[in-house]
Image 1 (cartoon, rainbow, N blue to C red):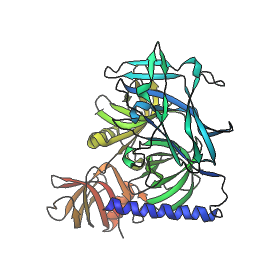
Image 2 (image 1 turned 135 degrees about the vertical axis):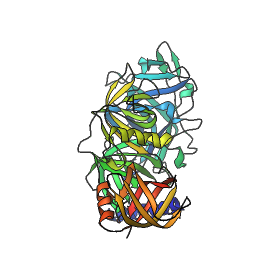
Image 3 (image 1 turned 120 degrees about the vertical axis):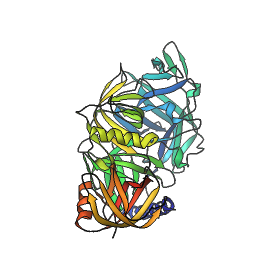
Image 4 (image 1 turned 45 degrees about the vertical axis):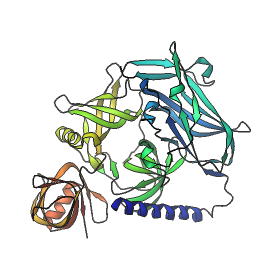
Length: 465
């Protein structure tokens, strides 16, 4: 029920923002461009577990031969095409925004000439190349993959198109890979669960709503614009601290496109002073090992390198900067404890130096998040005078509970190392400020997490009026 209410709240906010934008610009009539979203997917190829390509550009060609660029990256976007199918199509929003109204009969992708293949089930890695016949005429080492639309696309009228990098029909012979592209029929494109989380970089404008439920326009570094939505599960962080959204901020947004909201639903919004081109990976974590100071990462996207496999090894040490939910600084032990506690729900963003020979990224910084609240227990009540900021514990006289059987008051609470704290306005706050508040005076609060062995382990806490 809560998720349904949140979705209704977000839809209302998006409608208000859209109406504001329309009337603020003098209405919707007479425009020369229309909304257009370009997606990528793959058709299943059982012979490979990884097909890593680097995409530099995507251009639409109209019937006069004119070119409209919809995606551009000077460093290239590295994508595992094979990950865009798990038995059914999964979708990656590659280029959101608007294009001039018109008729388009072709799309051309400019990719790196080299492709990294990971065989299934052996895991053997090979590097192959697109045929010389596909060489880009202006940039050495790049190849052009094109698809002719039949019938042509009309804009307005075609607000979204999905291109299938049809791996089942790709052939490999003599170190040459011959690609096939098709237009996806759009089945399941309106299902939010089929859209992949990815990272989008750009500039914030048109901020609307009240934290934590906000929307903004993201003007993408790769070209185009899209709407981003935040809710009470979104982490908004800067380096080592929580942050507050503002117009003009440079941000990296990690999230998935929600076709029902026509917006990117943000899991993490990171404020950046400048966009860096460090070697970086974002994905699901497995096999955390504190003793060895390593974990396995299965990336959904990378910057600056193509993994030599479907996953990479991440190596940390005492120089690594560890961060948890909402940018909180963690010790190495706290970080690995959080990974283990989150289990299959653990994801991480890693920056550092990648070595292709060992398929290992030595981490300069790591940021942990959990895909869930790590439990569905909830409680509301009043804090007591028993609170320990160092231990991260306090007592609560619970007035409402849900998802567990309360053994009786006071309820003993312990916070996780990566817990999220919000004030009565819904704005993020630090653990120190939270405990300072409840030690100074009793507070009404709401907590979420899990309950076991007479202890409520809180992963999300909020002060209430």
